[in-house]
Length: 601
Ligand code: C2E
Ligand code: CA
Ligand code: CA
Image (cartoon, rainbow, N blue to C red; front, top):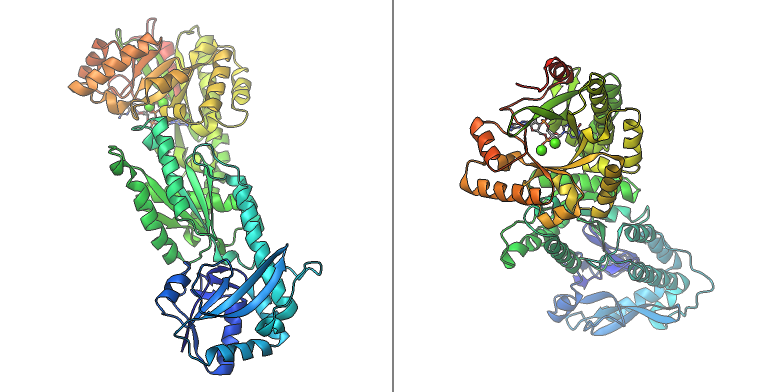
């Protein structure tokens, strides 16, 4: 029995195939033939992704070391030259090395074998190994003396292909543009590397890993600078665990993608566990009270998609699902495909639902904190599903966001809200303001401002009656784009309110960056207004808000005691079940029209 330590990274001469858990390529195939002819049983020792040749040679655990070059610092023992070629001016040689424990006769037998290998065997091995470019006649090479002579042209071609492969890898890496914060390459660079290295023959050997860091959640406890530090740390940890054969990129502000030379879920899982653990250890190591929520979604390229964007999107969906289920890692499977098809169904029915008025506008009134008079309301969507009945936003809003269809609903809601305001104005009520919710994706989407202007422009009510509500986290990401949309809308006369404020303790310095007119204090905080601590926070927030000229609104007011406490700390406007629950728009309109001025409960 002859044990060989393989080189996992000398594609296509020799490389590790995680699907079969074996070494593949030209050298293993030739050694197999050698084994069949010579009677030696040749076995690769502990095949795996990591290069263990040095260690195995040092421990004398193997007889042969495979696929090493003059650059490898491996104590080889007796060298048997396999291939030698000059590739773009540089000489490259690949050797087999016989260690001190190799049987005496082995070297001579190998020498005999390699000098007698028929050309067809090499051709076959090369064809099997991978898509190797045909030997370019212009590439200078010289057949090696001794044992490698018989391999002649095709062997040199293999070396040339290996050189080119390595060179491509290096070039692709060198050309990466770097993220300012983490120093990693971006999505388009990943695309380029993918195009250069993955093809139909080797794609099943790769998986795409998508790392999602929940910065939205982090922002509730950490500042922007700290989040940058964390993302840099994530990039470092991932970079330190990225093998030579893989490439790591930053696909968005809070996500990384790793194209990994591995198709084995067990291997990926074993690899990812310690990496995530290391990342999650950051807060404890730095004495921070928060936790880093991170999860991985994996798209095995064997699943069939060829578009990198699609693969990233699939892997991302799995990462988000993993995060929601508090799991480390989820793989894209047939079930994932079925789920996506279900969402496509939803996609198909959304248009129908919008057309047939299945989405309906509900209004929840706001009252003045001092007088309890109705001063305005919030537009909230409800879906009257033909089969499932009344659905609340928590069911359909996230689904629509996932499908990229939330803008359709948001624009529909805006249009209905405008109609509502117009009808009131037409009846002489021109001081009732109405706020509309917009998902972040809608607000940051292409042509958002234009689309809104087109909808609102068809009506004549005073524009300042319309308030756009954006959730707090919107104001901490992609600030530049969000800000410019906010400014454009304000210029058009729309007012902006920051929703759910306090849920994540956005700092006032972040708030200063956002040109908002009002702040809605989150119901989580408001619900605790009777406790000393929350009361102190709310009092301070309201005071600072007023100093900044903002209108301060409290949502989720459920009791008279809460209403009084909020009044005492000078909150301007109140909303909650204690006053009014959301009601169908027709009912809300009738109430407003029927009530004599001033509106009273
Ligand atoms: P939100 O903007 O925070 O809206 C307030 C939510 O609190 C509403 O839930 C409302 O019914 C509920 N609420 C009102 N008063 C009280 C109270 O006293 N106590 C408690 N515990 N809750 C109260 P709803 O209608 O289920 O809406 C949930 C979320 O869905 C909204 O949260 C809003 O962010 C979103 N949403 C609703 N309609 C739309 C829409 O058309 N587009 C988008 N993008 N999001 C929408
Ligand atoms: Ca809202
Ligand atoms: Ca809210």
